[in-house]
Length: 267
Image (tube, rainbow, N blue to C red; front, side, top):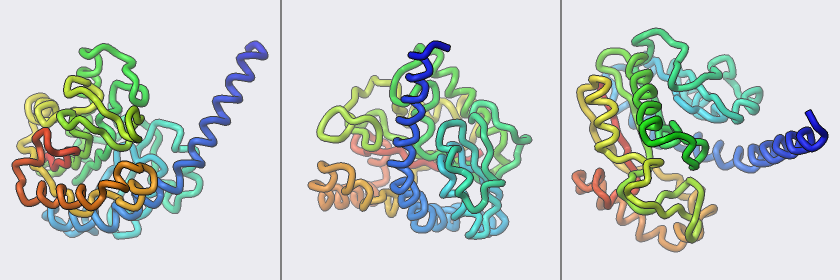
């Protein structure tokens, strides 16, 4: 390896370390709050089993904050993650439950889990960050493989909880921004997914029985978004009112009027 290559490698490692240190606090805050205020109440409503009898896997668990919270709540929870966030796992309380691996090739037996969490992950399958790395047909193939693996490890009548930006809503918050701190995109851009995409993957290709929409209530970490996105800070009162309307008018949750898809997929 040449001196220039060594220098670039060191610089990339330093950039990655700085990036991890910059986002860890925000991700900790968001994940801990979401588990306590959104996931646990949601699981209590949706599951036919008590929380203490659930076996759960978090796909793309990142730093693993959610796994610590879920285990401390009595759930038999595990997490899997393939990327650089695993470097922070030594700080986790339940690091023995965190597994390095890829969602397209899961190291678990068939029907191992009652609940599969796939939160803000599906849009990244087939992509490097938000950049296309494969052809459209390859991306579809990668996502089919991913969906089949999630379904394979799910117990009969179990649930896959999926959240992902809605392709048909023109603004995506949380990924690389290109306008006023948000990502504006075409409805034909295949980074994000539509309800039709999800149904095709899980109902047609994987044989799941149903896809149901879930409410926005307590889903968004407002303090984090208003801190990082000036546009959201300005529009927060209007956005909150708008999302409450979407929760009341359930049929709107999967249209171009809904910024996110929040779904429960039943095997």
